[in-house]
Length: 296
Ligand SMILES: [Zn+2]
Image (tube, rainbow, N blue to C red):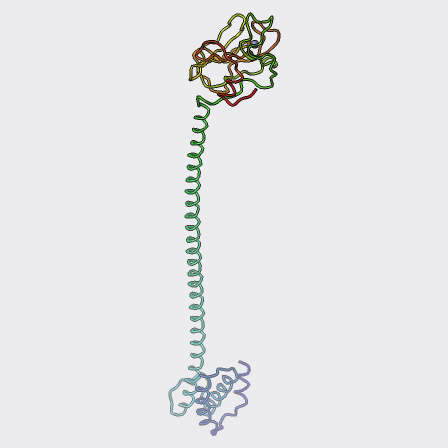
């Protein structure tokens, strides 16, 4: 404003030559302002306006009066008004553009967020599908494994229940008497094989069979008799205890009792007999070898 006033004071009122010049000047300014608005041009324009106003003897406030004399001034005022309007409009447009840019940015951000969300959804879906597939595969594998295991169990069960399978009747033994041996200890030749072992050592059925005797039997002491599928009986004698009872089915390796000293015996041992068809005893050794592949 001080520049404005200073410029006005420098112009001497009554300079007629400046009058028409001011009009041309302002017109030129109008064009210039449209292209490159600048503060110095505004100052120049205002100075010209003031000069015009002084020339026709009007005060600054009465510039708007529509007379022949101040037509140039009106043009200048209009010009200035246009300049200001232009500036204002530019600012408004700028603000609008900014707002538009801002809203565009928001839209862009929203779009990007949506895209990210969609991508995340796709990833989550893919993961879920993969997890489902893995679960299905795991279940399938578990099922196959269970079936295989069941098959193995069944095979093992069948093998265990096989009538021809054999297990050794005792472990950690020492043969102290063989079949057919004579001597003062027996009324007749020895009817079985003696396996000396510690008291309580488990005694097992050599093959699958049915328990046809589990009782105290005189010189035999505690005795278990097992009848096998071909009718052969195996006898387990001098036991300290019974692990099975009459009528029971036993499989090869099932414990029937434990080593003892019951009946006619001088030390803890298993007196083992083999009686085909439940009749007279035979030598257990070749029988074990022939039927079971065992060579005690
Ligand atoms: Zn014996």
